[in-house]
Image (cartoon, rainbow, N blue to C red):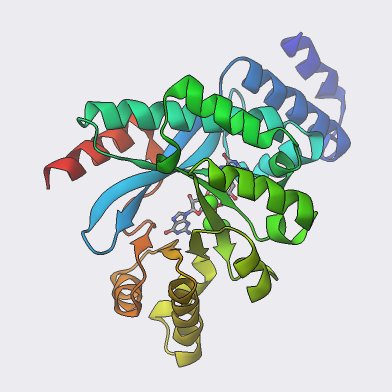
Length: 281
Ligand code: C2E
Ligand code: CA
Ligand code: CA
Ligand code: CA
């Protein structure tokens, strides 16, 4: 069916495949990939800036497509969100990330490993999302305090009451809740205080400017780190690429970091080695 489907398009000009047909084809392929367990996770280490240790990872989904090569999540997460496929996809990511975290932690003699998983606002919309998380923790043997759920500011700003209730339930399980890409949305301080948030992930766009000459760029990042501290939240800087950025963030008292400077997101086998190495030093 796959091959026949492919030949249907041969009489079309390539540009006609853009748009609806392309989307439908991609949606079918994604559904297929999910069913055949063909998606993969890559892992980017999180570094504790006090100890320089790898304390855990952020799980980032990858789609090795049979004909298009590796597809970037930014090219299929929006489609998954629009079609609702994000719900089973997100559940798969959560399950696989937890399963992997337990495996590595066990191999490292029970050394704790913090696993961060990105959660779409569409997953929060599911009234049974907290139950799904409980089920995944039970199935994988993952301890709740080792799991961090990353959500964007939109979770705080849309359907506020329902999402607040959902977050309170998740928080009660003992999970860590993080705001991803912090500073790029429009959430107010009032929201931050009202929701049970533990961690602010400072968006890469702020970190990017840290090497620069404009003092205002440093001030903004400094303000976010201070804000986090004064609210009793941990701060994680994302997208560190240069030593200068790392030094500036350390100076500000930012607690944790991720970025190409330390490591790109890597396949599971390599991430496992990074975690084991970290245990020796
Ligand atoms: P994000 O959650 O903000 O993840 C960080 C992105 O920045 C990742 O891109 C990562 O590879 C990239 N990155 C990390 N360090 C650096 C750096 O030093 N420099 C630069 N230039 N980039 C860096 P990736 O893996 O392509 O993911 C893109 C986005 O897709 C993620 O942004 C997240 O919003 C979404 N995403 C990825 N996996 C999932 C998932 O399982 N579920 C959901 N809902 N969204 C996901
Ligand atoms: Ca993230
Ligand atoms: Ca982010
Ligand atoms: Ca981002």
